[in-house]
Length: 134
Image 1 (cartoon, one colour):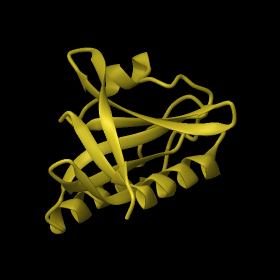
Image 2 (cartoon, one colour; image 1 turned 30 degrees about the vertical axis):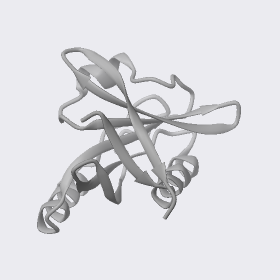
Image 3 (cartoon, helix red, strand yellow; image 1 turned 45 degrees about the vertical axis):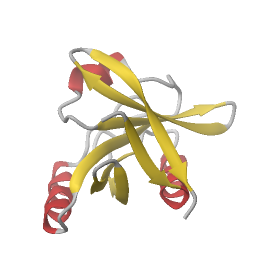
Image 4 (cartoon, helix red, strand yellow; image 1 turned 180 degrees about the vertical axis):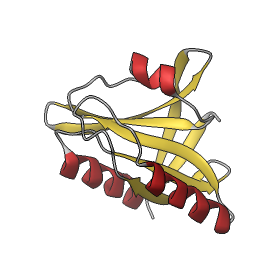
């Protein structure tokens, strides 16, 4: 996947979620069809850490069931780096288990920034994120 289409409303939902949980990392899933996100699903960070995220397995399974029962696909995983970096970390790359776009929210100068990456073969390649008005 070369790009991901996100609505401005979904962008705000994710940003508000990661901002509420800072200085801890926050995470969630993005469901939709083709390259267009239809639903943002928040998942609790079981690690409760400022430098690591581990999705709560029960909430993650529940989200996967919801995605499947609604005829959608898992398009992305998002999480925050409240203290940086703006890119996928060594840990993010090593632990990427799904062939989806990985979105990273980072806090830079008091402003949250969103970037997307395709992680494969030990490398993270930036992808285009299209943020559309409703």
